[in-house]
Picture (cartoon, rainbow, N blue to C red):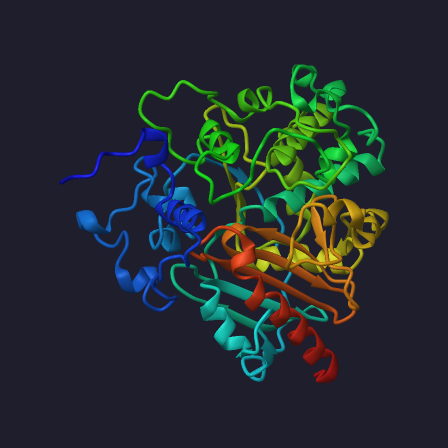
Length: 444
């Protein structure tokens, strides 16, 4: 007997997320998926040929670009699948990243969180489906590796690492008086007055302490995150779709739940709303703001680019694509108190504010079991560990990790099969800290 087809809405969800949802409901382990080697997109031949064989084609329209293992190719080739807008690096020569490559990092070992298992740095890269990773120590490249479809001259989607760029820009605009952090979002965008964001302050957007009827549970096929990204054309829409057609059209529909300021709750709509506020306050798109305020000043090697919706609005919540070394340059700028390439790009006071972190008690209410004692400030995740480390984090393993005490920056792109970082934090967070301690103890 042939099983009945699920509703169209459910069919369009990434299959790996549906599997995670089903297993969560049944309280059984997720299905065993091919490991990093077995799912290597180059070895599997995705999108090879002119044209590729039918069973090796990846498309946006049928949802295959966000299914595993196809996503291991699409994350490094996003521009071939969706409309994009460019973020220019400027016309000047790139600023070289000096190198002091080391051959001892692969053997650094650590204890996997919540287990008695030891793992090496090299083993963790495969465990986390790493596509590329760069480690800077005291401003020099000491380690750089690429896997799968990502190349040194390629670009990869940053997912929610994008948020930290706009949290930083938002904080810069507060610092220079362009934005009032205590003002309501509707002061800058009157269209938001009837939505949940109408009485939310800029500061509540920056720290994600808004009270919204909006779920970011990636394993729940009914979570509002899926409506949000469909509106912005980040995922394909089911047949007969009649919902919002742009990011902004979706934002005005979000309803309030609870009180603003009561708790931290990670919700991508906060960043897209902040992006709208930034655009209105500056008279320039979020992409233009990123280009003028940060990207063209980093001495970047490559242009970046954004996934955009049907009217050209950039996905501020997760649509940035960059080269890996340029992502590391941004992290290095933050490590150096906002200064890089001979200029002060981000005010030191903004970087200091991020490092101090947000309100730990509000963060604790979100229940991140693997992040005890952390906080969230200006869309950065702040560990408050003994090294004062803080990070930009994106689903499927995207990362900038800044460790001020160790003078270390890690930039990583990955294509982990499951979205939530809780799936790979046990083999990532202790690896970063172990490497930081190793570099302090073994300088070169």
